[in-house]
Image (cartoon, rainbow, N blue to C red):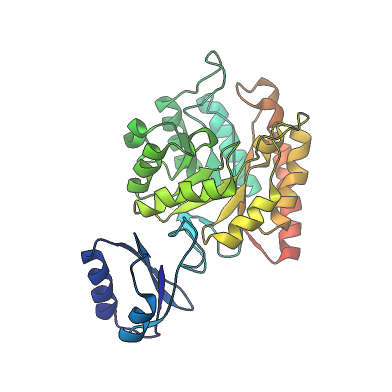
Length: 337
């Protein structure tokens, strides 16, 4: 249930209104937008007389029941959320690019990639330190040492860093990571979602490879309801009957997510396609449909990559892609950052 407040209501009146509901056992979310201020009521609202509240409370303009199970991430609650992390901004009419290797493989490798993607215009550096792999014998990442190398790359280039957390026991290791990624395989790891909700820093939540749009929104709800509203949704392709690509990029999901939720939405064409030659065309499509950004895998030597080399752009290919995206962003009226 959401209450839209009258204009120019004093803060003490809003605080009193919120405290009254919380005293009754409800959770609340206060959303201050450019057009209106809203209070979202979370809990069993079946017995709440909406019309009575509207007519007897002088600060409420009108109220609305949210029928979807996801309440806090629902677009009814607020117009849009802008997430900022280390200078990178997601949402608010911007198209923000995250780039970097699937995994951190060494000091020189991550520094070379970081310098390259920064020079081409990327706003954040991605790199896996802990790698969830289908085969137990595959490269599992450099783990804590990999995070240290990412921090070194951040210190040199100024790029905020993005890396994937595997479970809630690793929370302390990620306290100095700018954006904590919850990967596709962990999208419904609810204990982990609660833990990153308590972390109070931006979270990049990837859609599971066999998860519905509503399930993705419900996973985001876990994070936001735990107190962390800094969530970026990421469409990264879903598993279908098609075998010629790694996954199938669901472009309609990006559009629908932006209609249903106020959270920024980006997409990952690298994991969707699994084929290097498809990444740039899909990236341009992601910009064209109104996504808030892009996450793309870039390696200084894809042929020698320890993970996902076949879908990684090299530094020159990434530079060319960024030139094309800037040209198209100007046509679309988007700010590239």
